[in-house]
Image (cartoon, rainbow, N blue to C red; front, side, top):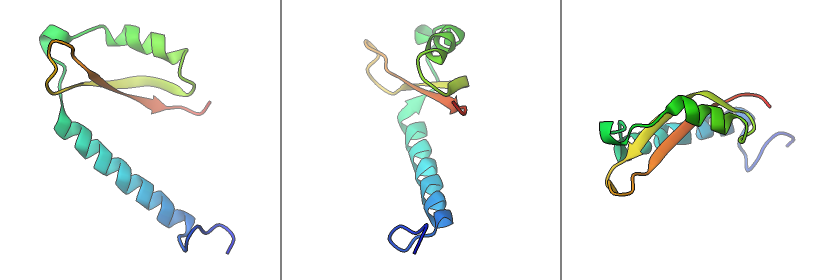
Amino acid sequence: MVGRLRGQTPVMRRLKVAARAVEISSCIRRKTIEVLDTHRFDVDALERYLRGRIAGAGPPFMVRQFRGGQSNPTYYVRAVRHPA
């Protein structure tokens, strides 16, 4: 069975990956908030910094802040994947 992995077609695998991405995205939304005004930073500067350091990553970047930990804020950053 060429192109099959444990009885799954390539389309089935892609659908499972897409479903998992939606599940993760939903989880991230529940655990994060919009960046608080007191913790905002220059996202354009972050994009310029990361663009040259992460192959294939590019704008637009989505930045959210994890709930809690306000004395040491932690951020979730998601970039668009561009072909390398």
